[in-house]
Image (tube, rainbow, N blue to C red):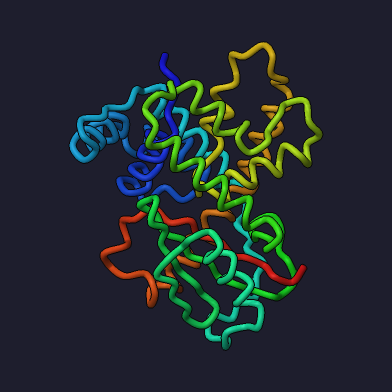
Length: 268
């Protein structure tokens, strides 16, 4: 069975949410076949019609359903006190200067949002700048912004580079962020955090790709899957919140562009 690629994982995830909005609990996902007897065929057919003939396997659909069932049991908690109407804070120039150093262009500032585009890649960046108390793990400290921008550029470069086979790309999707199975949990989880911040995508497909490697500590992989399940929904929810609140500075024609979306904390 081929490895479930990240992009296909994201497609299946989104299609399930689109086709079955009535599934609200882990119990619903556990009983999906009883509620929607033809769900696997519906998912396959929708993917085939809307995603260039891609028709996912039953196993891959089942993997995503299982992940959704586990994740939905975790309570979403975004403990922020963001005031989106607050006047631009004094630390905004620090973030602006970093983006200009990195050759970002077309910078737009609206209250405490800043957006920009990069000429080398078809991508943009959207940042909400805050100087309130740092909220881990979902916020980005300004001291690590350069590193996150480096990782984002590397990731986009790899997406465009066809020389990577799928297995190498998936495993590199963890090691590029400093993940090692023999590291302490705090280091592994920070690597997973950086991947979530940078890509806005689940690390679960990459972790699943490691299950056949004897050189990898499978106990560490299992613990890391648990960490992702517990935290990734908060990253997604923050991303959606910021994207929604920033509609004034993201033009309609840019909505399909790949965006790095961060809440950057300047309090340190």
